[in-house]
Image (cartoon, rainbow over all chains, first blue to last red; front, top):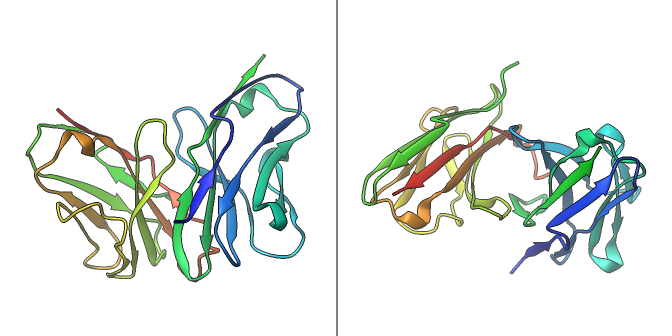
Length: 113
Length: 115
């Protein structure tokens, strides 16, 4: 069965530290990849997405992610985090022909001021 | 414009009761999705509508769960004979529905607690 793995369930960083959150998926063939974020008390919102082309994609708020097909990975990065990045981050996958998103368990990120 | 809205925001019910959860998608979005999120987990797909019809209901856990979207906009998720294991946050999302690449816009969710 298709699945998405996020390796770290909790991450604590200080402001200005660099961030990398791991995401691996088990899905053969062509996939669409997404990172969603849920800030405290808010609903899920899209950070960035990858369909095709340049494997390095940039999203909102300075986030970026790199698709590495050979590793079935789509890791999220940010060079310098801010306290306002405290949130839960979810990786998700689907196909063009199958709209349902398959989700990872999420990573709770806490940024210490 | 208005985003996806869900009512109620919280629902507490007793085991065995019937509940209905409502989702009002973004105007013009033909695709509508229901997901369920249990504590400490990512969302889990339940059902997807394209217009009025359920295009994929493979995620519904059993026949106690049913969803409708009679006019192609508002959707209702119905759970019969609720069980404690049904306790979760039920999320609704909508998208333009032209492909799987479309961004899904999420509502705030309904937190269902079955006592």
